[in-house]
Every structure is written in structure tokens, then in C-alpha cells.
Length: 395
Figure (cartoon, rainbow, N blue to C red):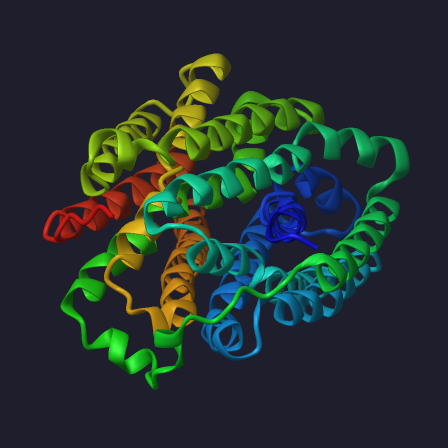
């Protein structure tokens, strides 16, 4: 099998990864009705997905360098992803949902990094952001599937049968990874000894971490869980209405991943592409915080703008990779992914605590969601300010 065929299968696996980080928003109303799981419970469960995913990155980085992407991804996906989806299908309360999301997070943890690892080893460094953006853009179809199509499937088959079907699909994709994916050749300089500590001794790496921690968090948090309760509480939207809005935001996130990928080669900069995109995100989030209930159309448009702004992950990864020596490639890309996904998970939990505190203080629903948008906006602003000190590097 060719390297391209293997990448195609890994992109298919990444579709599932994107789906599983975003599907809870659509299920929020029905899970609340049938098993008593609240929006705060789902926000925490989604946060646990990201935290489990993030904590898996360090062992995944070692496994990519030492075992290879094929076996690493197949084993995690079949047991974590497939097993977690089956457990979710039989859930009767909050604890089952949380454990399921932890298992699924572990199962999906190596998929994107396996793709990036192969791209970095098999293609030129100048193409990293473009191919990475293409991988994320196509894989983000899963984000779309977790919106209106999921809502239709749940209405047609029920949420438990839908999750059983997803478990079966995940298992089949894992088997395809095992059969089709081929590990890339190891370059001579990749056999040098080294560890994560060698990366952490580099000042440039530390300056990269805040932008990784906070840039993706608004897209993951709002699209993954808050968009459903927000549109339901403020604008009275049902599952189909939430699905439509989630579809719009998801399409914006896909478009942004495809858009930003080649911009580092066009404008000869990575740093300033990211800075401009973050300014777009910050502006949209602060506007939502100031006017949380203007109109359904306006506010969904602002959520879509947030989706456009957060699609710079492949360029940030390419920028960070420029500082990483070849023998630490696996650990480098997974360290960056740990920060991105871990930051999203931690921010998800912080946003849940913030929401609960505002509700407990007697704040209106509009003021409570305004507090969440403001929290995400401030986080992205802080990350961007630190990122201004990073040296720009383009291959």
C-alpha cells in the first residue's frame, strides 16, 4: 500500500476524532430528558475527553518514535474509540458518559499526530502546513457529521442505536489502519538519543505553548458543548435548530483549516497569519460577550466567525516543528498537541465552573453565557500577546 493510501485512512480516522469531540452538543437535550444529564455534566464530560486525549500525547509521542504510527493508532482506536462508544450506548447516567468520553479520548489520541508524523517524515518541511491543513480540513467532516446529520440519525434510530453504529464504524476504521497504513522510513539522524526534557530546555518551545493552549479552546468548547445549551436557552432552538447552527460553525472551521494551510508559503510568514486569525477570534468572542442575545442569525454568524478564526492549528504546528530536531519529531508534535487539546479540555472545565458560579449568583442566562464568551476571548488574547515574542520561522 502507498503512503498516500495510509494517509487517506488516517484522515478517515480523524473524521471520527473530530466527530467525537463535538457530538455532545446535539445530544444535550435528549440526554437531559432521558437520563438526567445536565449541560454542565456534558461540558465536564467533553472536558474529560480533551484531558484524556491530552494526557495520552506523551506516551503516544514515544510510541510514534519507537513503535510507529500504524500499530499505535490501530490499537488505541479499536479499544478506546470502539469500546468507549459501546459503553456510551449503554449509559444510564453522568458517570457512564464521563468514562465513555475518557475512553474515546484515549482512542482518538494518536490519529492526527500519526498523520502529521508521516507528513513530516515523507514530505518536504515547506509542505507541512499545507498538508496538515488539508488533513484537518477534510477530517473536520466529522465536525459536520456531529451536527445536523447526527440530529437526523438520532431522531430516526434513537441515540443508543446511533452510538452502537458508531462503535462498529470505529472498529472497522481501526482495522483499516492496521491493514493499510505503512510506517515511514526512519532517517539516519532520527536515531539520536533524546527526550522530552531536551525540548523543554528550548526557550522558543515555552513561548509557543500559550498560543497552543488557548487558540483552539473556543472552537472546541463552544462547538463541542456550549452552542447547544446557549441556542436552546437564549433562542429556544430544538435539536434540529442546534444541528443547523452547529453545521454552520463546523463548516466555518473546515473552511478555515483549508484556507490557512498554504498561507505561510503565500505570505512568507507563519507568525502573523496566526496573529491576524486570533484577532478575528477575539473580536467575535468579545462581541458575543457584549451582545449575547441580539438575534439568532447575528449570533450564529458570530459563532461562525469564531470557527473561521480558530483554524490555524496546522500553521502553529508547522511553526513549532521548525524548532524541533528530527530525532524528537514524534515527541515534539505530540507535546504541541498535548497543549492544544489539554488547553481545550481545561478551558472547557473552567468554562463549566464559571457558568455554574454565574448561575448560582443569580445571573440571567444571557449574562451566564456572556461570561463564557468573555472567558474564552481573554484566554486567546493572553496567548496571542505571549506569541508576539516568538521568532517567526518559515521553511
